[in-house]
Length: 171
Picture 1: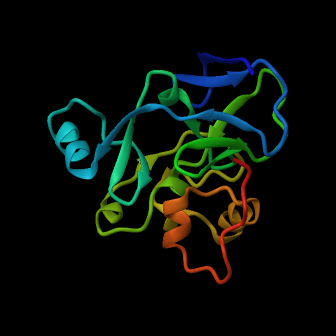
Picture 2: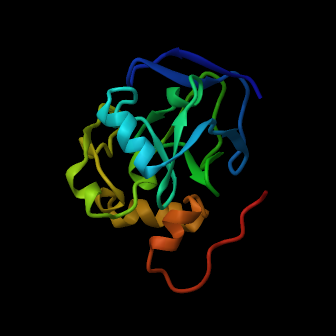
């Protein structure tokens, strides 16, 4: 699958597909340096990493994303979602030339500190919430779509109070 970084109408640069992508297909495994919460916080405090950029992958572990992975933009009406720790999968068929996006709020578990973090959203989707916060900022109908698709990271599943078990997902 060919992916390209191009100018985005959402924010700066974004990742676009040059090939059709089928619903459920793995698009990309987010890459970067794994760091602890403490190391991540230290780098943010020193200005080495922007506060909005590290990707949570476990309860107290983050990915400081590589130059390609950091280009995937947020959308409140995303066409992809994260599974396992950092695998980006298509939530719908994605046509060539379309920007690939995921909902950043679905990577932020509820915590004491997440109450104090948010960022403005410029996705321009009809369902745009206007800001990105933790998982509590996601409307229940929107969250249900991700739950039904099995498109949540493992540590997010573990934090949800959902009866039954996690849906099986392809490797």
